[in-house]
Length: 327
Image (cartoon, rainbow, N blue to C red; front, side, top):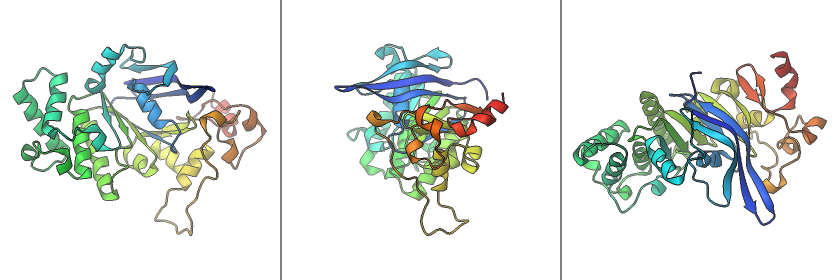
């Protein structure tokens, strides 16, 4: 992999409560190269969205980053003052949220919102910014963009609004795009269109993408690599093809088994028993141990580190011997 555009090292996020501090992210580390799409998958509460919010310094109190480093093109951004971070958001980091209505001002025409963003991050004149906005609407697949640019968000369908949000996130040509559940609110046919738009445009412009989702189908279709998260930690990270076809971590294996296929008939979909632990009740050893069908004594008392197995990493004691043989 080429030199990382985004590098996250040992990220730790805590929430201060009256009963003490709760650890929401614990030692999260990963890289994303220019032009690469890294998928981040896991159940609700795994820490996916918190990771994205930490990168753009948008954690709501009482949450805060208490340890680790976040680097963009080699320069630290986790310790920047708020004013400097606001300059980076939008210009160097684009953000696509789950619900396009939360990203678009319902009282402003979409063209005004695009032009405002372009003017804030480039030296173009208003006329040139409008021309660029029309070009971006065309690039994300909005029909008749020269006419639709003067429409309001409520005049667009959900899929078209999400295309506008993608244009809004990319119109300043950021180096990194964080897409948090960008297709969840859309029906399946529209999801496929949005995935194709996001994948093609980001690769054409050489942007790195952190794609956050709970849908392994979206990951398999879109991403180059995938990081599987559980209870605030990455438990497996590697190439999508490797993780989908031969997952190493029992949790990742459970996620893959739950994906329906056309190749086999089944009366019931596979499921992982139990539920994600609460932040104030994370087990002492491996957080997945209460739900794991291959748990043994060491799992209950000692948390596994990320072990290197070939070109991927997995946090599971079952693979300790293989990791030591590969050294």
